[in-house]
Length: 245
Ligand code: BV8
Ligand code: ZN
Image (tube, rainbow, N blue to C red):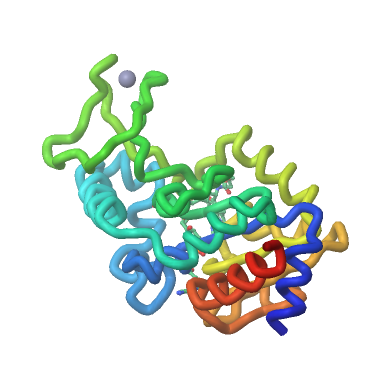
C-alpha cells in the first residue's frame, strides 16, 4: 500500500494537504471533538462565537489565553515535519490548515493557508489594528487596542463568522488545481473546510485520508488509513526522499 501511495505522491501534479487538530494532537494539543477534546468542557456554541464574546469577553479571553499558552509552549511533531519535508522536496504544493496553532510554520512549512486564523494574531474589534503576539495577554484586565482603545479579540474565525474571502479564495484555487489531497487529522464536520476535499474528488482527483477514526469523508476517500498522522506521514516521507535522491 505504501509503495502505491509513495508513487502517487511523486507522480502528483499538484498535491495539497488539509489538516485539522489531529495533526497537532501528537504535540500535546487537545483536539476539539475527541474524548479529551477542548469542546468537551466547553462547546463551540459556548465560547468560539461572537455572541459568547459579546456576552462574556473575559471568559472567552481566558479560554483563548489558556490555549495560546498551551500552543506557544509545545513543539511540532513528526507529522508537521513530514509535511514541511514534502514541501521542501517540491512534492507538496500547499498546506491548508484549519488549525489556529503555528506548528506547521515552526516545522518549516512555508506555503500555509490558515482557514480559521491563528492564535498568534490579536486584532481590534473596531479598527484595522492587528498584530502578532509572542505570549498570551494577561487576562484580566481585558486587552484593549493601543490605537483606538477598543476591546481586542483573538485573530481566529468564530462559528457563524465568514472565513476571510481572500483566504477561502486561495484555498479554493489550490484544491481546484489539486490531483491529490492528503486530509489528515480532521473530523471533517466544520464547513466550508470539510467541503474542500469534495472539490478534488469532483475534479477526478484522489483523496488520501489519515485518521485513527472514521469521518464523514471516509466513505468517499480513495484511501482511508486508520493510523496516526505522525506515523503515517513519516512512513511516506522517507521512501519519497529515497526515490527522489
Ligand atoms: C461559516 C477557530 C458562513 C476558533 C474554528 C449554524 C450557525 C452558524 C454557522 C453554522 C451553523 N451550522 C453550520 C454552520 C457552519 C459552521 C459549521 O461548520 N458548524 C459545524 C460544527 C456544523 N461553520 C462556520 O460557522 C464557519 N463560518 O460557515 O460562515 C456562515 C455565516 C453565518 C451563518 C452561517 C454560515 C466558520 C467555521 C470556523 C470555526 N472556527 N476554529 C477556535 O479554534 O477557537 S473551527 C474548529 O474546528 C477548529 O478550527 C478546528 O480546526 C475545526 C475543525 O475541527 P478538527 O480540526 O477536525 O478537530 P476535531 O477535534 O474535530 O477532530 C480531530 C480529528 O483528528 C478527529 O477525527 C480525530 O480522530 C483525529 N485525530 C486525533 N489524533 C490524531 C488524529 N488524526 C491523525 N493523527 C492523530 N494523532
Ligand atoms: Zn483599535
